[in-house]
Amino acid sequence: MTVGDVIGSAPAVAGAALALTGIWALWWLVRYVRADTMTRASMRQVIGVRRRWRRLAPMVGLSVTDKMPPAVIVAPDGKVPKPRVLIPKIRVMADRYGVLVHAVCLPKVGLAEFQRAAPYLADAWRCTRVSVLPDKPGTLVIRGVRVDPLIVPTEHIPTGAVPEDLAVWDLGLDEYALPVSVSLANVPGVTVAGLPGFGKTSLVNRFMCDTAPSDAVQYAVADGKVTSSHEGDYADLTERIFAFVGDDLEEANALFTRLVKLRRDRSASIRALLGVKNMWHVGPSAAWPLTVLIVDEAHTYFRDYKGSDTRTKKLAALAAENARLVEDLVKKGRNVGILVIIATQKATGDAIPTFIRDVCPVGLSFAQKTAEAAVVALGEDIRNWPDASPTALQDPAYVGVAAMAHQGRPGFARIRTPYVADADAARIANDTAHLTRDPAELLEELASSAMWKGDALIKGEAEAA
Image (cartoon, rainbow, N blue to C red; front, top):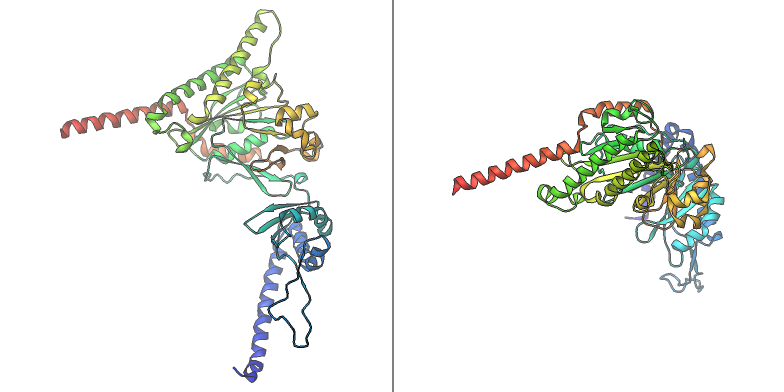
């Protein structure tokens, strides 16, 4: 191609570039117009982050000098090229809460350097906080939130779709507006603590509404706040619950006894019916569902009654027996697919006996009044993370915010859990009521089916012989 050809094609190239620029600008404008107010502010923030990055990065220590000259050792005029200042390349995206930046590491500019610079980036980008985490090898994810996700109430509308994985519990958004979930596979128990009205029951409702469309999960509820199932927070979900008891200790004792019998029957037959020693090796199914016992206001059932009169002695005996039965479910029910979720206001030993509380690997706490209450709910390590302590969540703006230990990394996360409207909970319960079955009946049916197949096989072999 001659110089004339290149010059002649220049208008076409310029026109194509202008057209692409126009298409991109139109696409960006359409996105901007269709976005909500918070996302629009984040999109404007993205423009500022990109435009100022090359100047900001060296100022906060995120650059490195390349002293090795390029391939041309000596320029035509005899001068040696100057060392180059290298800046990490970034890719910036926006959402409702702020910006998400993917950065490419350079020699001596990696995770530690970005984490040291995080406070300065927060100031420069006008963010409430900035976090830096590893992504793929050689890249980092920088999350900057302009609006604190913890003080923005959120709602969750259950879709009614069958969850892809029953073992994953989606909790909400953390303080960087990133989704947080916890694995329930091989988890025997979960404790949820917090002051009244701060979101404990709403958290459990969201779990039930998301998992109810699956026939591989069944629920039993003991709610110590009410007397009957048409009262209280679980009234809208009653149709999807195979067993419910209120604050009567005798009825609760009967339910716990019933579930312990299910645990024993499953333990005795799991090898024969599932072919494994641990249900989680094959996963929950309609015939062998994950059985979830929810004990709300647990202190109602476990408190230590003091007194010498006949009535008090009877209540004390029932409470002690209830604790023993729930201990059996927590300590022995994991491999047969029984999960216990225990909620109470203050997770002290009188509300949740320590021999139950301390073997539940997952613990969450909403607002607490004292550091001691935070420690019994989350463990001693919460003292080392005062910023994440639930004692700092007592403001009404933090209703629905819980603290829990990070899974996979040190420290604690604060999570904004969404609110599920009563009408949505009732809709899900009504749509999935036909899936409600007693796991004990399902176990009998599975055993009968296995016995029938075994007899048929023996008969077939006999006839063949």
